[in-house]
Image (cartoon, rainbow, N blue to C red):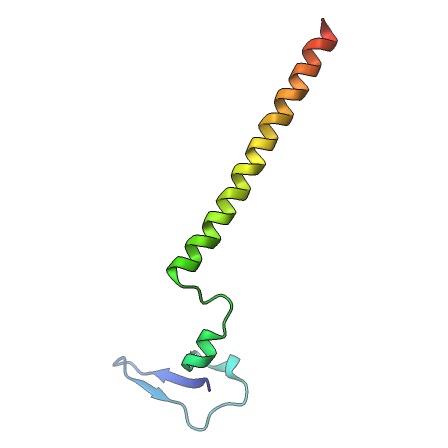
Length: 82
């Protein structure tokens, strides 16, 4: 269960009593471990590396396709002008 907390001027964290019905009104919210682990964006370092590698592989593939298309279209322009 998420808990709404506040931080005072000395940096001490204290629970807000009573808890508000809408947690979006809180300045700080502390999540439980189960709520954090159910978050699809909570990635481990290894998971983030896999996602990043997949993105880089897609970019590399798109670049290769773009270079091939540019080479084919420049070859067509040269043969048409000759």
